[in-house]
Image (cartoon, rainbow, N blue to C red; front, side):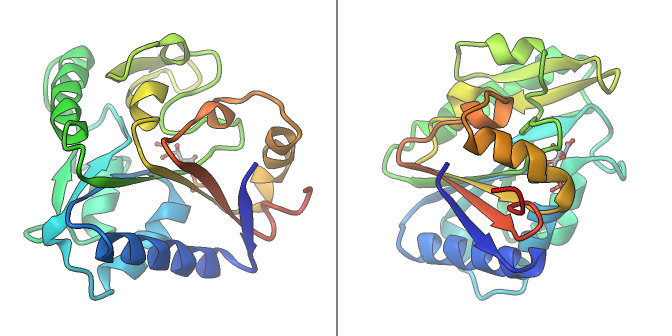
Length: 223
Ligand code: 6PG
């Protein structure tokens, strides 16, 4: 596990924002995958106030809950509010107002095929991790873990009794860089198990160049 530890979640968020700002400044075209969760949200709030030239950047949502895009539970609602995307940041996210999660996944697969075909673009994807080792909406024991494609998937998650939409492992692996943002004592055990080689969904994520784990001290406390 390639990791770096920060004293607090706030320090982690500032460092993650700095990394993104540096990568954007070095690229003519940038594709930026966004995660839900409280740790990425802190980073978006830092980024929203930073002097970033968003004109070269297209962001996309790595997973979404099957709720209205304005619902308090919606990942894209959180991103729109915390990164302040409206009118300034290109943002691709699943259309959860369609009838059927499979249709929303298919449309998102087409959008992502267009984005990943821009081979001159540099790409970085943020991911979070739950204390069960899930990442994006790739939950332990669910069907999406078996997908061999680089599609965007509709994934039934019995743990939540709900549909989720999620990037597949294949799609995540198209990113040059994947950066996990993980904070909190409740993550410590699964972080240490992954470092010891145990297989969880988050442990299966690959990237073209590098998968980096940014941890706060509590999440890293059992390493
Ligand atoms: C979701 C969340 C979830 C989140 C992790 C980590 O849609 O269920 O996005 O996958 O990323 O649970 O969340 P925290 O960063 O809040 O610990």
